[in-house]
Image (cartoon, rainbow, N blue to C red; front, top):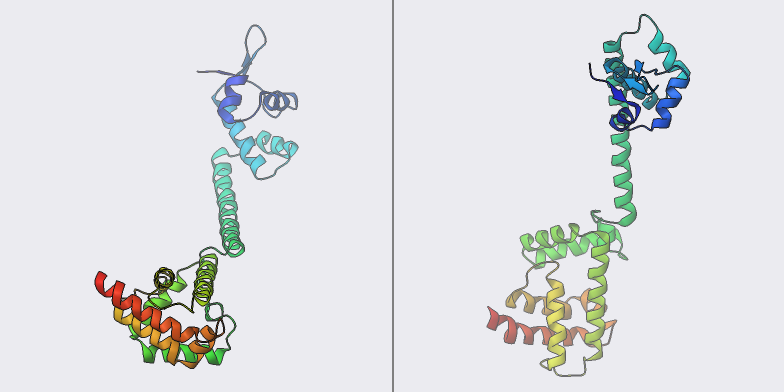
Amino acid sequence: MKAYTVSQLAEMAGVSVRTLHHYDHIDLLKPSSRTAAGYRLYKEQDLLRLQQILFFKELDFPLGEIRGILDDPEFDQVQALENHRRLLQGRADRLAHLLRTIDKTVRRLTEDNMTMTDEELYEGFTKEQIERYKREAREMYDPELVAESERRVRNLSKAQWNAVKEEGDRVTRALAEVADRAPGDLEVQKLIARHHAWIGHFYLAPAELYRGLGRGYAEHPDFRKFYDGYRPGLADFMQAAMAYYADHTLEEEG
């Protein structure tokens, strides 16, 4: 029968040599034999006993109690292993539940992968305004387009949504600064290209749709109020610049 030295057993079991020396000292795990030089040698029954010790330790049993259990003449090793499995499975289930809770908390704290609520999508508006805007959107545009826009936005994390809002604000402020130029001005059209790319976060906007969106900016009172809040007349300027972009860039690309 093969025998293992204390260092070999320590490596196999993932414990220290000092721990095995301690177990020997307190009569918890004594080696089956020793060499002529006095070195400890452990055999199969010692390995099985150590396995039981480690299982009981994992379940927080004190060493003295473990020794009493293992030294009991009626100790049933198979039954003990089955009990260990049941108890460890229960602990594993509890730990898995805790891990899921931690993952949810981390996602909430980092705001990753969190679905957006209507209140977050329409921050600053009342519930009545939100319902009106959603209703008007479906009346003014293709309902499938509106649904696609909502799906795209709701798939964004809160951090991504905030980045989209910030980009929209930056583009609008930049356009307000050049609103005294002609709609076809090169700098204006570069900014409108950024605006068109920004719209792409919500839905694809070919020429006719983008042109119609510009008309909406000028004709819808809430849109006009929003853009004119950046600079008086900006809504009309946006309509003209977006129409120019639709005619001279999107139509040609199409």
